[in-house]
Image 1 (cartoon, rainbow, N blue to C red):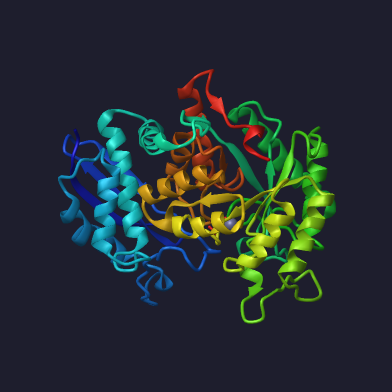
Image 2: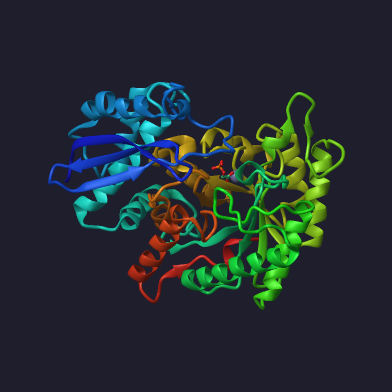
Length: 440
Ligand code: PGA
Ligand code: ZN
C-alpha cells in the first residue's frame, strides 16, 4: 500500500494564458503524480466554485494563489499519510475539509488538483498506467450496475469541434460548437485519421466561401464569419462529402448550442443574433427540430438553458428518441441535478467535466448514476485546458464511450488525442472501441 507523503502546488497557465492550479502528489516510496486543473468560459451557474484571487493588479484578478495556498496549508497536512489507493476516502476528506456545498471555502480548483494528482500518484506507485488504475476504481463502482454497462477499458468515440462560435470564438455564430462524429470509424486511430481529414476539408470549404477561416477558437475549431448558424451546418456536410463520407451514415454532426449564454432569464427568451425575434423554449425546440430534420445531427448539447427544465422536457419529448441530448450547464456533472433530470425526463445524456464538480469520486458518482439511468456519458475537456491529459484516461478507464476535447489543433487538445493513441497501443490490437453503437 502506498501512502501520500506530501503535496506540492503551484500556479501555472492554461491555454488562454490564465492562471490555474497544478498539484504534485508524492507517494511515500517517491512516486509522483501530477495534475493541472482546467477552466471553462461558458460555465454553468451551478458549477463548483473556481477560486480566483480577485487582485486586479495580478493576472487581471484571475490568479489562483489562494487555491494554491489552500493545497499547501489546509489540505496537505490533513491528508498526508492516507492510502493513495483509497480515492474515495481521500476525496471524502477533501469534501469534509471544505465543508461547503459548492467548494467555495478551499476552491474546487484546489480540491480537483489534489484529487487528480492523487490518482496519478496511486497509478505511478503501482507502476501502472492511469487508465488501468481508473478502471479498477470504475469496476468497483460499477459492481452493482446492469451487466450490460461496459466495464473494460474502452477507447471512446470522439465528437470533435469543427466550427466554433458563441463565447469561444467571438464572431457572429450563436452556436458554440459544430462538431463532427466519425461514426464510420472502426477504431480510435481510424476515427482520429478521419477527423484530421475532416478538419482539413472544413478549412477548404471555408476558404472557398472566403470566410476568413484561418482563425481558430478556444478549442481549435475554425472561427469563421458566416451568414448564420445554419451555414455552419452546411459547411460540415460539404466537408463530409469532400472526404468521401456519406452524411448520416459514416459521419454525423453534433452541436453544443451552449444556449444558456444567449438565454435571458428575466423574459424567458432565447436571443440569437441570427434570428430576428427572441424565442421562447418552444421556438428554440422548433428551431433545433428543424435542423435535425434537415441535417445529419445525432447529438445536441445544451439545446435549451441551464434552468429551463420545462424546455428540456419539451426538447427531450420531441427529439429524445432519435437524438442524443446532452446536459452540460444543466447537470454540471452533479448527481443532485442529474437525478432531477432523470426523474423529470430532461435530456438523455450527460457531459462529464471533472472541474464542474471538483473531485474524481464525485465524477465517478455522476458516471454511475448516468449508467444506472441509461443516460450516455460524454467525458469532456474545458475551453481552458493544459497539457494535462487525465480526462483521456478517465474516458477509457470508465468505458464512458464518448469524449469531447475540442479540435485537432492546439496542443492542449492534442495532448489528450495523443494520450489516447498511446493507450490504444497499450491495449493492443484487440482494444475495444465504443464506435457508432454508443449513439442512438
Ligand atoms: P466551456 O465550454 O469549457 O467554456 O464551458 C465547453 C462546453 O460548453 O462544453
Ligand atoms: Zn457545453
